[in-house]
Amino acid sequence: MPRMIVSIDSVVIKEVELTKERTTLGRRPYNDIVIDNLAISGEHAVIHMSGSDVEIEDLGSTNGTYVNAKAVKRQELRNGDIVEVGKYKIRFLQDAEGENFEKTMVFKPGMVPPLVPARPPATVAAAAPAPLSALIRVMSGAAAGREVALLKVVTTIGKPGVAVASITRRHQGYVLAHVEGPDMPLVNGAPIGEAPVPLKNGDRIALAGTEMQFEQS
Image 1: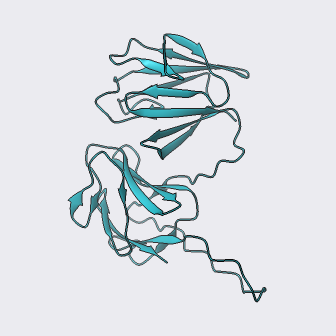
Image 2 (image 1 turned 180 degrees about the horizontal axis):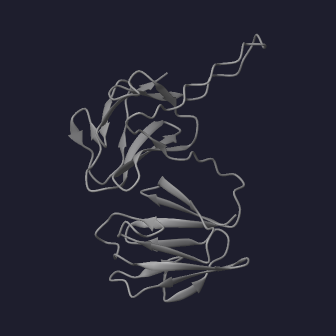
Image 3 (image 1 turned 135 degrees about the vertical axis):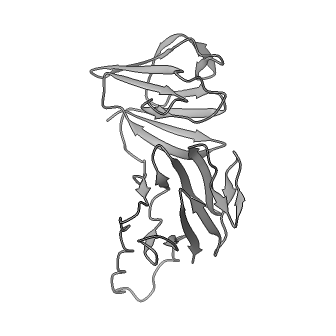
């Protein structure tokens, strides 16, 4: 299924499947693809889908819409094309092969995140080096004490429409980035700002009224 992969500074912050004939993109919260940044117009662009054909149309935005670094008013999208709006890059993919994303994990009062799956018993004596692994431990609210494993390349946390952040796995570690909402995530009591920040074992994250701890092994 066609999808758009949104990133900033090479950090993927969200993935949106194109399931409708008309998918809107902009800063306002009612858009299908919300990018909460002042460089993005309230109603910036729209993506039209007819069968296997996908086109993007700029809606008279202040800073324009670019496809493969070229300003466009309306342009057909091909697999792998890069759409640029402000400092954000949006990669268009016709299929999901090779991608590895996690759906948003939402922490709400009374809702319990999934437990970390149990590890299967070891069956091979000489195992390969363990891959990078980490988890988020919920420290407050009804789900306090629960653990959420960061199993995918990108995991988003928070409350959609209120405050959402992403945790992205890189070769050298994990980074936290603001996705949407007026309030920035806090790491050890300090707001992170617009740029992604690296996470260290034991860092405390506060987002949408929930406190969490990042743990990496």
